[in-house]
Length: 89
Image (cartoon, rainbow, N blue to C red):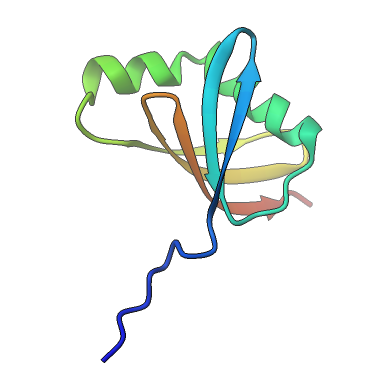
């Protein structure tokens, strides 16, 4: 019996944004503009701070709607696991 790892195709992309170091973990092919907009949203809404203060031992699951797409992500200590990207029509 083989157990399939759902995250085997995910890659880690180190990224510096506004003097903060993030690890983006995803299997999606994202445009740089989307990544910057996503990180701007996370910073503007203080989501990392909320996760570290209120859920320090658990990731914070978020649905984030941006200009052209909606994302489902987990946030944990400057690591962003991006599960899903859905185009907004």
